[in-house]
Length: 234
Ligand code: SF4
Image (tube, rainbow, N blue to C red; front, side, top):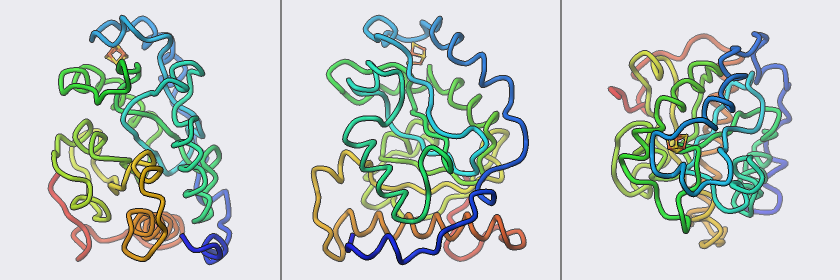
């Protein structure tokens, strides 16, 4: 991302990015309920469950893959180097990760050796994630990486092809929400180029699109379903 880019986006009114509604009490009981969860084998090796950080009133939710070592130690998602990059990237489009977003993962317990969670582990943990989405009620969901796509939507495939295209959710939990797949920040740490066409450059384009959508939802009339850039039917 070019150095001047963060200033290219106007500051946003913080109040437009959060709802005035009181967060669902379901979120209060989630840490205790997840701590008691043994639905999958990840419970055997975790130090603690990792539920969320950020603002449960935010209109933007960020969903990643699963906790790493630092997250497992701290109990908070996206706090390592990848998390710091996520914070920077959100800030580059005028979003404060702790004020304007609610951040979680597909699985709540750390997969050993930072391996990808299995399909069974993701399916076991999905009800927890769905309860978070229902309680926070985000208008826009940022899916960080292919595993988040697979875990939440059951869509498999390379994130290079999937990123940057709006998807409109359907069903009880995802209906009415806009979902944007992007590269995972860990991938961007391994691919730090900011050149036009690089993963980091694409991610910045995608985040600007997310910011535009949040602004539209906050300020304008309802976005008609099936607009040209939207991919529907999930
Ligand atoms: S990863 Fe999810 S389903 Fe598995 S034990 Fe942890 S909280 Fe339960």
